[in-house]
Length: 297
Length: 212
Image (tube, rainbow over all chains, first blue to last red; front, side):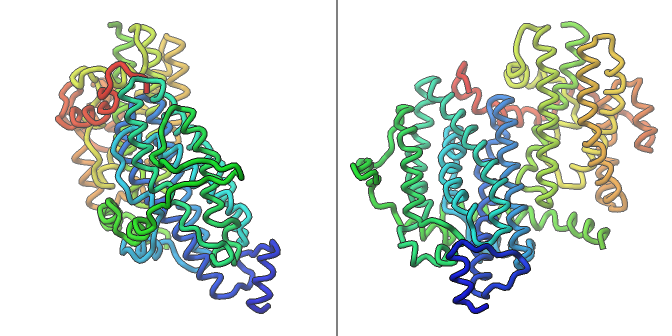
């Protein structure tokens, strides 16, 4: 099969298995894309795990621990897919902590209050599930298959987040303030989350049908699904231009693309601290992996 | 306070504090597989604490969350073994192994309780604890030749004895294969418990009386 025939095959909805032939460029793009997804799940654990110790009720404690555990489980599944494509997990982790590979913009920011915990689980996970649902049709079949389990679990995270937010919005003025501050804090990164509005036919990830929708399409879907809910709760979105036009398209202020680029290239407010934290534990526990591996050999 | 709720609170506080300590590993365990496993164990322990608090709360006229969060650190009955903050993996597994071995002995007695609700709950907990024991033993077998693990077991041994009442300690010594020594008894809380309490109640205390 030629590269061109392969391209036509995936563009007409064809799917590829691990052992099938694939162009080198396609394999490289897959590894880059899926590895970043795995990294994001793993780094996404860090902002939330700080709150596992501070969850204010037993129910919230259980839900948050389970949610963070799900994210670790997702990274495990996703790194396995990368491993089958030829890049071992240890290499992915090494590239992550050295800053060679990337992770999603939202996981470079600090979490300041319990309001952030609710808003992350509700809105960040909502933004993520829109991207992930678009991967259910990924041209690489093994990745599409694990996305079913991941999307299923993420939908519970959204319910958990919404419940945290709803409970606080029905609480005291101080609690409502915590939620509003969190929405204000996260809005910028949320609007950057789906990436710049590059035309989908120019997006190599779409061309290879690794993803099945363009960046702007995903952002519009997010706005359409969640802005009405945010407003309904009496919350304000910090964008005076935000409105839905008569043609159904949401209008908004231009997201700060320089900030997005700056953050994902390793200059976010928490990037270095979180990578250092991962590095510390990887090194500290290296002896445990050696013992286990020596016994398995 | 009756003896039943005394005993229930002792075990509940152990499970709660250990669950909180185990959850310190979520996201940073030595492997992703172990991360998922330890998070499950943490959730089980907290689930057990909740069920025990619910039983005690009925008798005491309060609720499980109030017992878990709203007492002064000095009122907790947890054993010093579970209060120690996240340690290295050798100590974590040493504690896990020692605690699960002690807990099995304690649950066996509790399952014989005259109080049907207590006995029923103990049986239910024991079914889940079986998996914790399998996990703990697997790790104990993996690490038993590692000097740092053996040192950790010896260091924590007096603390492990303090989990059980004096009459059950000989059985524990037999199961673990170590000689009985002076136990680090319950009731002497370290600063680590207060520090943990400060953190675990920080959100709850921030808006008093609020629903979360």
